Image 1 (tube, one colour):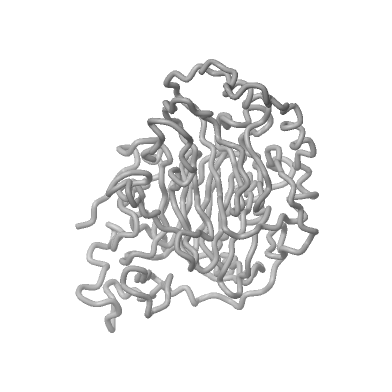
Image 2 (spheres, helix red, strand yellow):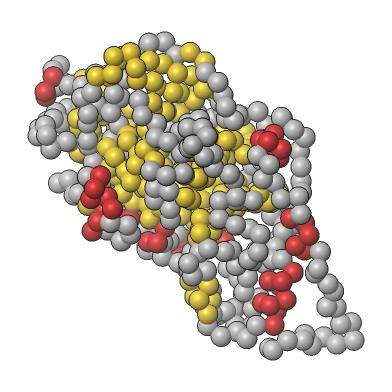
Length: 462
């Protein structure tokens, strides 16, 4: 039985009613959905009958090799008015600020921080989601399906008769400002700040916006996001599968004679093809390869309740694993509101040099270890083995604070894209964006020595 969830009944924003958006709950489930306007659109007992119900076309979308083990095999069957092959030839188009060239500028091992990325004004220039994509950093190789990229999207207008699909990898989209109404071949999703969505490789989508929008994208090549293993935590906790939402089938039978543009990112380049119909003509579908969304407020936080600082891996929402056990191509980690109760402990994030690369962004509020110039809509990158940690003011306050139970990060949502790959920053990120904070290093300059060789006993309230 197909279970539908109207988002107005789900924790979080209730404005989905006006968009008629409904969902099926569950991460990675085998699901089936059909538009209620065409009951019985799904074939019974087989995938590709000689003639499909309602004279639809059957089309399979494969997210894994045919021969992958059943536990990792991803595919969906789509029943559509016309197959997606009905388009004119693809032609190369302007790349804008999208790139996979990691050698544009020389490597930079410094701690990097960006001020909020500037959104173009609609009154000056109309920019949709695709034309507003800006590659900030990345690593690896698209052609060998190994690597990742981090993009910033800055847009102010809807895509209209344009859609996009990515032949290179999955998009994990993190809106920071403004809601996104996302049309996909599987149905519609409304995604707002403090929510995320994943559009997996090959899925066509178009985005409507209602104001100036900004956000972050983590793109992974050759692998898919999955829920992290819980180990000793047990069966429940962190991001629970039931809280992930999959859109239900919705179609439009809309003619656009010669005027609908399909944009494809292939081997890091952008191409466009024209077709006569909307691509969102899927009347029914079934399978386990779908887009999905998640409300970050539903994350079940795990934390230290005795002493010391647990590793940030306890805040992992989704992971894209590498072939090395325990090592990720990319992890999506959040730092949500929670209680801090650890005794005899420096509670903010500790000073650290990491074999992983850490990109951080801020959706709202302020990050506990950097409460000054790290702002919503900006970001920071601490590359492999580059030292980082609390600024001087945070260190002084936390070292002297009375360690009573306290709420941490109320009204805040920071996140991290962490990767085992050593990421290169693009020319846009270092220069053209004009958002790089040249004074970032100064936040650690006031740190001073508290060394007391004559006394082992530390100063402070404890």
